[in-house]
Length: 349
Image (tube, rainbow, N blue to C red; front, side, top):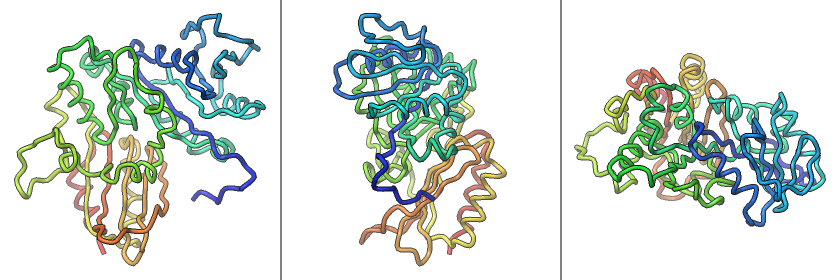
């Protein structure tokens, strides 16, 4: 559990992990961060500096590892170890507003996210802010056919930037958006051309921090039919929202999301259940997020996980009139939705 922050130590730096296939527009986005006059100091960590092709006029001075830009941002390459690269940045005298890590070549963002979860030294100075996936609206259907990683990137994301929307028809765009939703119903989607997303929508969002995401949007974990008016599903009164869209209806998508809801939980049943579930299904669970109502506990308990790594903490007190309801969303492959639903409900007090 997080310790109380030392009042002397500076606030932890938000870290954004940026994923997306070659051609999805990451370089355009990174170049904007490194050259636009946004008044913030960002540190951008890239795999291959050469790929970005930064205009030399924008570079103020370069030591071998780190390039400083005249807008106050810096850019450096991951040399070997991400943790060492981050620690090197943290030792620089000028504080940054945020760090952005680009994961080219590391198609699966999970190991990068886990770094910021797991390493105590890095964790004390940084906090994982959001995993952002850039998606090429035109080529996504093809990507999903030939690559498991394209799906993982979307499944793992807190924010999806659906880019190059000018290259597809309205129908194609609606289809691609439905595909993204089928893979990851909880991600926030921004539709853009030429990576023209406001940087504030991508950086320092607090989207990975489930407590903050829930404060920004109390319905964050609701089945989307409950709070997305644009999805007017014909649902009967006893419709089960275990799956939103059957992913199989949309291309050959193998990632699914399972939404579970129940009443107040018996902590003696719930905690062993979630430990066991992440042990059994861990390799198949890409992300897990939930708010749990524990019996006789005045606070909401927020839990989230990445593969087998699980974190939980009390968030805040239940407000008057709030239904004490437990909700859990799992995103992954080969999940037995029936078993998960049955065993989750069996943890009720």
